[in-house]
Image (cartoon, rainbow, N blue to C red; front, top):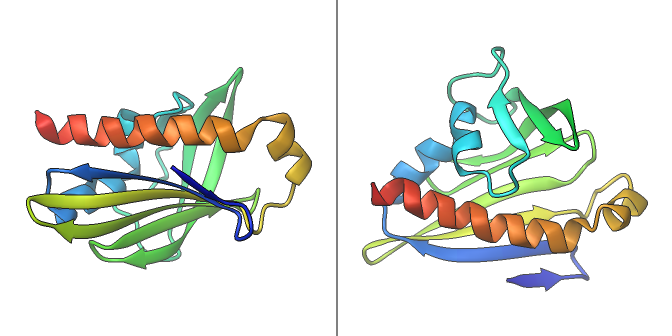
Length: 148
């Protein structure tokens, strides 16, 4: 894990023994996000969510942290089989960067809070530390998904 406080990015990396295209397909399908989410807060994609994400696509998720709520995201980064990232109203971006390596993919998950609209809320929610733990678990879950 690295925390680049200057650029406001938390990164977690993991080697996953699966091709970048397979991992990208999992990430680009919002209906699958609840299967690998390490935070436990992602419950399901809303019916209106597209079956496959693309640049500019909007998708809403049913979430729960103490109480149920809905979160709408917009895909702001999209490079087929290489990078995907989405932002919600809070301004921060969740992104995945996929780099092919011998026998699989180096996957980097990032929480980019450079444009976050509520630094106080990030502090109150202990988002940096909590997101780091969740991101580690997310990448573990993605690896387990492909180990089946």
